[in-house]
Every structure is written in structure tokens, then in C-alpha cells.
Length: 191
Image (cartoon, rainbow, N blue to C red; front, side):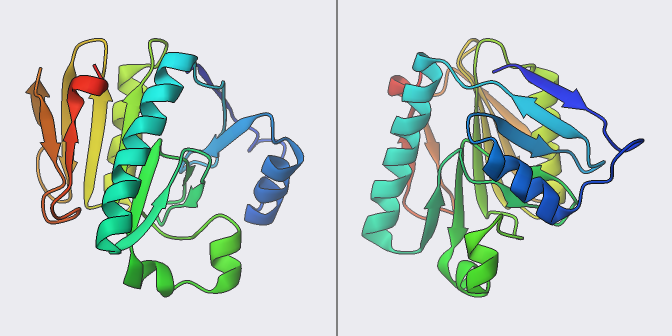
């Protein structure tokens, strides 16, 4: 997915409501905002990446339906992160009690909460450096567990709150650890 960053700050300081309305008025485009409030315009994913994102989300969704521990979100959901950015992970999950702490109005728009878990699956055109910076932004905002999956190199970067990034090469599965208890992602369908 190709992303373009546009710094509108010198001419326009977009409020949260204006950003929300911009996204709603342009549903064919995908927008995010950096913590510096720069507008990020992203292209849609291709078929292979979209299919893999769907299947990963489906696996997490089935686990969540069985455990009823939280709420799952797809890549269309934008979160207003405490660190200042507005981001849409490929897959996200929030513990039920944390989700329930939000008002109905907060749940309806871009939820002002950092997910407990995020996953980003790089597509062939993604910049690894930008994906890693995005993962660092998630962690700085309070995400507890994050997976950055690189199909091209068959590697995974595991981000844990307060710990160094762990890199796994050609691993066959990932554990949800104590954040997604009992969840295991089998990677043969991802590679």
C-alpha cells in the first residue's frame, strides 16, 4: 500500500471533527493522521494482502467470539490514539471492559482509545521504515501487543509494551500471550 503524507498545518489546522467529516465525505479514500497532525493518504490494498488481512481478522474474530473477551476491528476502523495520531491498524482488538468505558458517541466516531492488540501486514509496496514507525507510535500510545508481519521476508516483529522488539524469522505460529489468551495465529496461510 502506497501512502502519501501531506502537511496541511501551515495553511489549515484540521480539528478532530473536520478530520472525521473529511473521512466520511471521501469513503473511497483511506486517511490517517500522524501525531504531528499530518494527513496521510493511503491507497487500497491489493487482492493478496486484502485476502490475508481478512483471514487473519477472521481467525482473531473466531477466537474472540469463543472467548467473548473483547471487541475486534478491521482495517477500516480509525482510532484516535492518545499520542495524537489517528490510525487504522489492519487488525485491532480491545478488551471488553476498556471498550465498555467509552460513551456511545465515542464508539460511533473514531474511538479515542489505543487498542490492546494491533497487527500490521506489510504489502509489497509498504515502506518497512514507515511500518516500524507506525508500530512504535502504537506502543507509545499504550498498545500492549503488536505484530508487524513481513510476507516478503517471512519475518515477524513482535512489539510488547515496555520491551525491546523481538524479530522472528520463518516462524510457523504466533501466540497471543496474555493479551489474547489462548489465541495462536498459524502463519502458513499468511506466507
